[in-house]
Amino acid sequence: MSATNFSSAKTLKKLFTVSTFMLMAALGTNANAYMIGNSFATLLSCNYNYNADYGTGGYTGIYRASYSGGIYYLRFQSYCPY
Image (cartoon, rainbow, N blue to C red; front, side):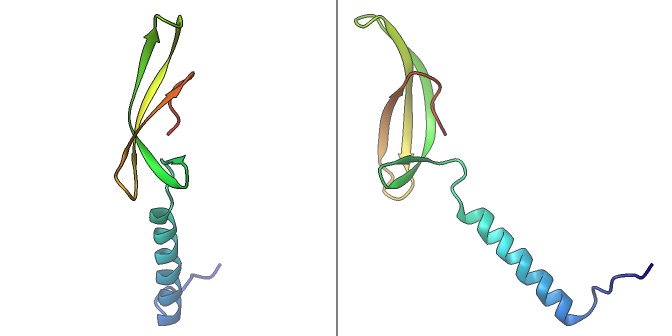
């Protein structure tokens, strides 16, 4: 069994490059974002409402657009996607 040598400059550079790429990929994705049109939005709140006029209930989600900062109100039959 041989020991792995991580002290060489080439190995450290490769390890740094791979680590940096993985970190940037993780930060660059919108894992908790919902698509509204062509932009991502994050869920601010999701509340259940009953509409007596129609006799049905549903969830109203409040979303904030990532780029414009606009607020959107969307209605769903089940819990709001995020």
